[in-house]
Length: 403
Image 1 (cartoon, rainbow, N blue to C red):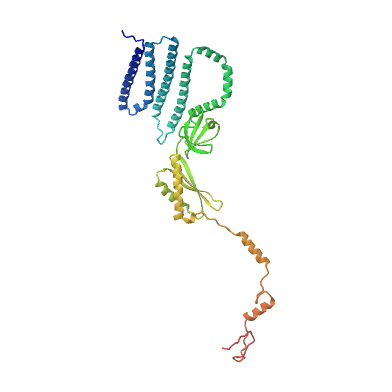
Image 2: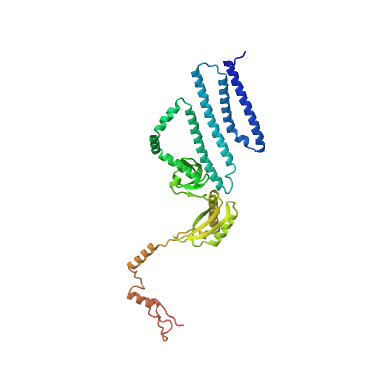
């Protein structure tokens, strides 16, 4: 007669248990595949849960087979084997619970996509779910570890001694972990107060970027140049920062020009309307030009434009700036900035030199004798009617002839 409580019986029982697990897993897979025909993506979504559930079922089935056909007579070895399986099953169960929790939260997030124009609600929900996932994962881990510790022989006595000294330990732990606990509570406050959300555009610590991740203790900001800025959660609860997408994603942007006084503002407005009408980056809300300052020898012209989000707003600003610079160079060069310099210092030096240097004494100016000589050569020469024609007249080599 075949004896099940033998090594051969143990091997057969383990094989039967594993075959039963494979059959059960196959049935579940067929059911899930049938559901995925009507709801695409379900089979791929359940993949992590199915893998972990297989491990749990296999451990449990082998443990049952071992308990039913155990040929080991030594009670000490048998207790050790049972303890190993007990701890493994508890750990696998916690692993499966984490996977199920992630599955449920992930399915909830499917209803809130981020790739929509107005995703404020989706960003808030994703932020809260992200923090909630971490909290639940920590709770499941703590409960699993506690359940494993409770299986240790004499664990109740250890727990009693720990509880007896809980007062001292709590004080020491509170002082040592004050900063860490502050970050934890700050992270939960950020998640549920709607101050910042995942994918929010912020300026924090002088850097422009998007909120990439919110944990219980820190926040990761993805900066525009692909760097990552990691800030403690308390930074966003104690330090002022800019949130560009707090209520909506639409933004206004400005482009400033320092131009010459001869610029034509009306022509610039006409050109701006033409530029924004030809690009999809403009959301159609605002496109205007204003003269905001006229100091320093220039006219400060501000171009105000709007876009649907921060990324489009940045690209629109650069596009308008480039197109407007090209138009100013080719169509309106008189508006380009110029520096006008009046050489006041050189002019004053010339006047001082003219007043201090002596006047040149010329042949016909500068003295009484020179003035008399000028009068002789430029004054009227008297003509005597009785002088015969051809008679020499006193003067500097001049001969007067009577007509």
